Length: 432
Image (cartoon, rainbow, N blue to C red; front, side, top):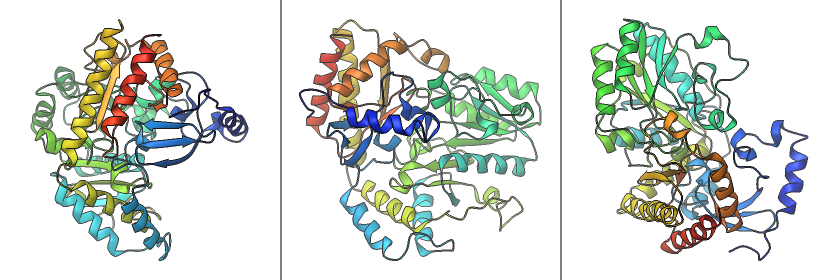
């Protein structure tokens, strides 16, 4: 799988040059490996469940471009569709029939969505849905949860997870206090804290936004009754419930977390999978709320590249592939084998660890656990995870370079891939 001697000379050379050209040498912070130590590997190509770096090392990939490669990298059906679309042009900046096709597929799949607006990223989707929440309710305050990440917009960088957690930054310089005064935070899985915030700010809270399954402070599922409780609390207070399903949408079930758990929010944000690996985002929900979005209504939001024909093409083909019988059963089978194997090996080799999975999304922590919130996740042994990450890299397995990120499998991962991964984990954990 990898060379006898693990050589990353070209990656190191390219990264050294990049540091003179881009802040930290990367276009997104977690890629810099700050959380795990060492230098990042530089990708050369991807295919199926595998990646190859510029030095020729091959890895089994459990990041999948942070989720969208659910059918495997460079799936031949997606690539073929993109080749055909390229012949027609890369950007229209005008309506195309492809938008109708993908919009209908999203509406048919996601319980809460009656109308949808395409944008270019998850961050953009969450920025837009926040404005929509406020426009619809006439209220300014929102509730988010500690460790949940909704993109890098100012109003969301309050106790955010993901890259902010990875770098140890509680917030970000450059975010005015006036921007975040209307952002209230509560611990994830804590309904009493949410009730207290509504009591403290009566008739002022537009709504609650959350990752229904947290993926940006590691993998943290909702406790029994948590999502149901949020639905009830928001209805009682005439506030909106928003599921940020940028990660979970079309991944933990075809209809996302809301299908999986049977809880229908008022609004939903999507991304990643619905672009098949190309930049995309979307937000949607009840028709009466979405009708406020320009040009149908007064709430303004626009984007030149929104509904890009290449992203629409890749998204349509990806969703078609996901509709094939047995897709999610296979994802669950592979991911269960992986996470249960990792936890068993940790136990056998004397390491405290906990974790879990839902369909093709998983995570584990080097802590006894259980982990119900970001505060629990922060008790993990980050130094040990860093050593584990490096060891797995040297054994040909690419994991997210942060303890605070979920992992992802794809339908391209085989039994053999999982077995090789577990064999690598056993070798690495035996020497941590």
